[in-house]
Length: 256
Image (cartoon, rainbow, N blue to C red; front, side, top):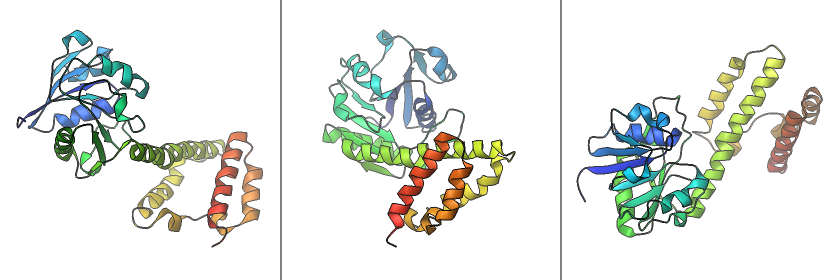
């Protein structure tokens, strides 16, 4: 295997953008090519690598990374089946074997990516890898360790579990932030008021288990306060969310 690894990225979304930016930081890695159906999404890389929207222009590389929507992975990979190099996808909940290429694997950076957040520190981001062949797994580990200090071998079931845990820990929590902001806005209060609380809880779970970090009326069993809150919440959706999560917390702590 050559000292300089050539990597091509397929996709123009959040993950593709950040992976491309990270590859460009490493002299031993070469961003050989980027493909996307719409060139506008990858136009910013036009002066750094070859970009294309034409699959007939795809060049071989040491590694193809498919950073595309989950539903498109299987069909799209079939279009790359003629290439002999390793092809991986970046999805948490998609099995490796959906790939139709000769050599296949998974390169799953476990993080929430947004294009408008320019700087991402990959060093602390877990990267989960899998490959059909031992030599390809070794190669992916080598690539992963250039990105991160935390590269982990994981199968499809383990990745799916982590992906679901991430939905609970990030996506659902962020949706709760949105509900909190609506409650505050409806009462002429700024969202900034809860930001110190959000940071405190985020920092707390870095040091102690979530179960020990739980506070609030539900864990205390304060039924009077809970009922007052439910009466206050006129929005049906917010009321249901509050009730469901309160019941879950009650159940978790009822015997303690």
